[in-house]
Amino acid sequence: MIHSTAIISATAIIADDVEIGPYSIVGDHVEIDSGTRIDSHVVVNGPTKIGKDNHIYQFASIGDDPQDKKYADEPTRLIVGDRNTIREFCTISRGTAQDLGDTIIGDDNWIMAYCHIAHDCVVGNKTIMANNTTLAGHVHIDDWVICGGFSGVHQFCRVGAHAFLGMYTGVNRDVPAYTLASGQPAVPKGINSEGLKRRDFSADQIRNIKNAYRLVYRKGLKLSEAIEQIEALIDEQQELLPFLESLRSSERGIIR
Image (cartoon, rainbow, N blue to C red; front, top):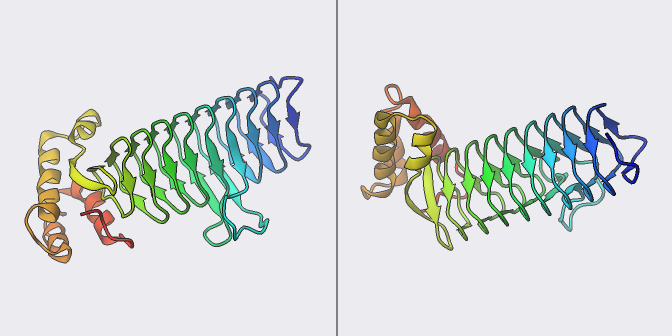
């Protein structure tokens, strides 16, 4: 299952059924779990842990040093979950000692060609990053987010669950859950209603999310006032909780 031209470190731990293609390199302190396939000319450096049933396409660079001038060869990590697709020429860096020390990719993500995920990013589950999506350091991408082609996210920003970034969007503040954003800098354009329909949100739930969005963006309220009104709805409208939490937890401020 490992091509004769591949170079594998003696310290790498690789499951028996992992496939590694021609001229790929697996460096020191790399762990690769069962069912994962690595195509030709891929470089995986460690410390990196890759889960089950991932597919990494040719010419990707996985787990190399962070692009951070403060990095001084500390033993940081990249952790990749299960069933991720990582297409050609993607670059995913390890973490830095200035953060948790880990870059973390969850499960079932679809990461298209030429994407860059920088040091200390945390990517959830079931996200889609179209070609050339770029995440700067310390970015958090929550579950089910879709990033349009050539979109970029500034350091320390968070994109909430089920949000949608249009093509070429430049995010420099937090994007609340469910929000559709576009522009440079990003501005809110409504909620990702089509995505919510595809994920079996009911018509009532989508209506409730739209109403909560209007409290923040259409009613002329202070953010604290909008949060207070949304809090009063939570007991009967649990679908608002991700939206509310993304408003409460924002440290950079939300897009307005």
